[in-house]
Image (cartoon, helix red, strand yellow):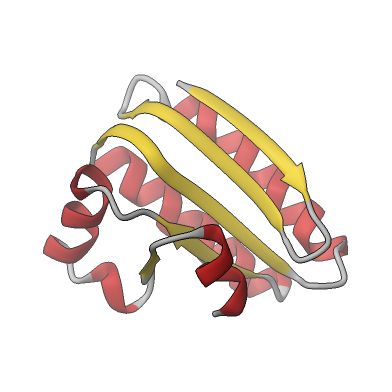
Length: 113
């Protein structure tokens, strides 16, 4: 798994590539925590978690993403998910979390909200 963070004019964007499962989620969590903190200081107060290059998204990843969303709420940061790939979208839909973690098709769509 590879994680990058990019602070843009419109948002803080965290991009993840690879598998998110119980073995890798421990590497992802600190990146998301840091990104929530960074987004909290950003004028847009927007964190975009870009998952379109994720090849596996297990329940551990889903829980971590939901936790990030809740931390964002507490910090006044909007957390939006970018994913059109079924590996990510399907688990979000099956668990009925698509009402909370509504996946956007692109980063631009997520910025527009």
